[in-house]
Image (cartoon, rainbow, N blue to C red; front, top):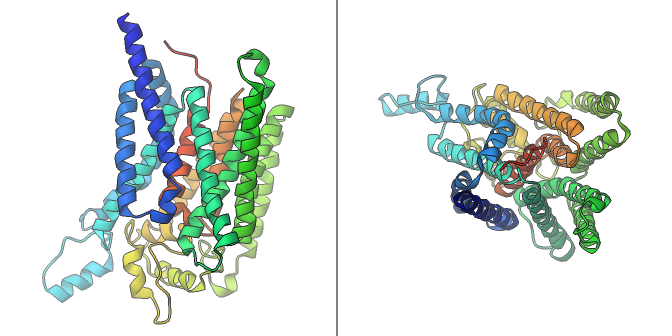
Length: 444
C-alpha cells in the first residue's frame, strides 16, 4: 500500500510539472509583445519551480533513463555557460581594452574582466541557464510517451500563435509598424512551427495506423488531431511566405526536407544511403552559399546573409564585429557597445546585432561561435542517428534534428533566436526530441 501511494504521489507531482510546462509553452507567444527582463525572470522562476516538483516526482527508473539521454546535451550546453561566467569575472585575463582606458582616466587600477559590462553578462548567464533548464524540464516530463504528446501539441499551438501574430499584423494592421526584432522572433518561431506541426501530423498518422493495437483510441479524435495539425502547418507556412523574407524559406524548407527524408529512409530501409542522400545536398548547398558570399564587399560570413530590411544595423554590427577581440566583449554586451559605433543618422540599434551568429561572435568571440556551431551540428547528427535506430516515435528525434538545422541556418539571417519565446520553444522541442530519442522499458 505504501509503494502504491508513493507511486500515486509521484504521478501527481510529474503531472503538475507537465501542466506547468504546457502552460509556460502556451503563454510564451505573449513574450513577443510584452517581453523584457521581468518576463525572463518570471520564466526562470516558473521553470525552477517545475524542476523542483519534477525532481521529487520522477521514479528511479525514469530518473536513470533521463540522465542517460540528457547527459551529453547538458555537457555541450555547459561549455558556453562556463565561458560566459569566465567573461564576467574580474580575473584580469584578456581584459577588454576599455578597462585600460578607464584606468588611465581614473588614475587607479580597476578589477578588469573580458566583459565590458559584467552585470549584463551575469544576467545573460542567468537567461541562458534558464533556457537550458527548459530543455531539461521538457526532457524529464517527456520520458513518458503520453506526456510527450502533450508537449508536442502545446509546442504546435505556441508556434502557431506566433505565426498568427505575423499574419494578423500583415493582413489587418500593415500600417502599424511591427518591431524588427519582434518580427524576427515570430518568424523564427513560425519556422520551428512548420517542423513541429509536421511532426504532429506524422504522430497522428502513426497512431491512426497503429489503432488496431489500441482499440480504445478514437478514430474521430485522431482525425481531428490530424486536421488541427495540418491547419497549424498551413498557418506557419503561410506566415513564412507572406510575412518572412525569402531567406527564411531555405532554413524551413531544409528542416522539413530532413524530417521527411528521415521518415522516408526508415520506411524504405535505406539507412546509410539515405543519410548520404540528406547530407550530400547540405554539403552542396553549403559550398554554393560560401561561393556566393560577397568577398568583394568584405562582409563577414556571419553577416553576409542578414535580412536586407535593416542595412544600417548590419553595417553597425560589422563595425562592432571588426573591433571585437577573439575572446569576445562579454555576453549581453552588444546593447552597451552599439551606441559607441552608431552613426549620427542611424536609427536606434536595439539590443541585438543583425544576426544571431554575429551577436554570438561579437559577445562570446569568433572561436566560441564556431565551437557552438560545431556543437549544434554534432547534436543534430546524434538525433539523426537516433531517429534511424528508433522504432515507433522516431519522428521526435527527426523533428529535433530538423529544428537544430533550421535554427543554425536562421542564425545567419536574423537575430530571432536570441528572443525569450524562440529560445523557450526551441529548448522545449529539443528536450522532447532527446527524451524520445530511444525507447524505454517501463519501470515500476
